[in-house]
Length: 288
Image: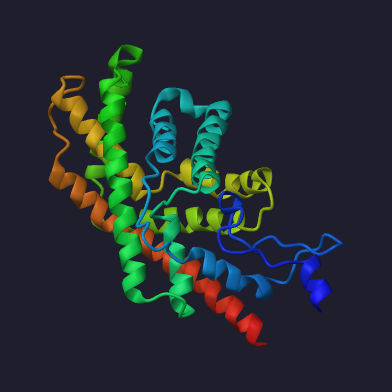
């Protein structure tokens, strides 16, 4: 038994953190996947919030996703080549988050699994979600300021700025129930991508796992709360700087009217429809 333990050590918490949670893709000598029931505890352990680290902004990758959506709104996105480019941008955005070890609010909705298993308390879950959402929002807004200050929105004769405002106005005009369900569908796909990426042993494995659900999310135009935290401040800055018509205005109240249902939808889709659903499935599997 001791010899076997030395040959197949159990990874410690924090090992290979940037390549995914420990124990998710452990293999035996015949390169066969270890049964899911054996590595679910590692999954729950790795999803628990790090003490003293409430969250890290994941704004740069999310901004890539936002830029993909900007291109989607322009005429060049009607052909197949443009569609593939948009999908790859979105997939690479989440890959940067997963591989670099950043904290993204929508991905952290999977903490509901650890909560349901009794590994973390309700207070710890809410603390993690609150701090990470706040940090992501500050990072997204800060990056919007940098993009605006760089003059990036003035490209293509100012058409990029006009598209940013157009997208923000469309999001601002969404009925709350549509924003809610688009947020649900968005984070179902995002959390499925994160879930599948955890099974990868290498960066290439994770990239392959992420592409399909994120490509679907970008192509469908669902609502991602952190991406919207980038769009609205950037649109308001563009209008304030005269880069686009000031009427109708993108407003702070309009931003809140979008973010509240979208955040709620992201929480419902990621924590309930993905996290708790898989928790119930694999708890039953281990019990039987």
